[in-house]
Length: 413
Image (cartoon, rainbow, N blue to C red; front, side):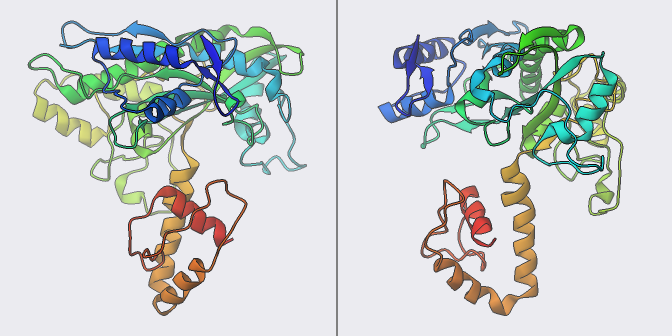
């Protein structure tokens, strides 16, 4: 049942949300519990429902030989989300269906617009004449749905690179494809490796929700774009966005600097991470499958863990394998892995810049914190809230959240 939420967007009705929660609790697959209506509202906002799409449906992926409790995936096919987004008239402004020339130079691209980049150009050259591209963007992350941590979820969202960058993450520019199982109440049978089983479940979920998209990438499908023009469209995985732990999970690779190849995207070695001039080949499905075959030879848990660390790969079948164009440079699913902007800029590059400032200008730190506290208003960011009184940002005294790093970054422009 659809309803209008308080902010004017379309969402699940409260009755539907409560019914969904009841099903979750009966299956004992998630710790979702709500003490207040605010908690229900928070969860309802995370499960935005769009007109034209079928509701999320439960898929039982329980392995009776390994799981002692049921494992339920709530999902719809990513292709259904792609088709809905591609044809939605609300996405008409700034929508791009064809390759754009950003300038006379092929080397000049607009960072936020895939249609000006090499991926789009190479994909168009490799596809049948007349085919348009739906540049699929996936995003997933474990998320708290209640402030006290009692409600958590792991949503997978879909958007399109065809949609203008300013519209992609608005309600009409994104779709919820799945809510992955939460493992706080998941129990495995004796002798089963818990961490490995849960990683297997994660990739089984990805395989389920991407199944139709992989099929349509091969065959293509005719549909209307937001302006009503009928096109022959092929959906291609352009980007899978997430923080570093999420990227490693999606890639099936080991995380951290203790592994030989810590990057989920390429095969840069641990000792070359600080080499700014280094260029390394992407991981490939074929290469990862060869590594997986080698890991299959290890039987003991200790020996396998050691081998996985050396090879920087988990012994698991990866859900993003199997795309028809996965063997090409532009269709390689490992190429699609991208860090989200918050972790890349505010919690990444900018934090390193501030560390350099602290080291280079130690006598200026106090004055910079005073100047920062004198900034009273700024309008370029919707959530602009500088560190509160008592925190000293440049002196690094206090615990700072992502929005505070982003606010300081905006104020310093």
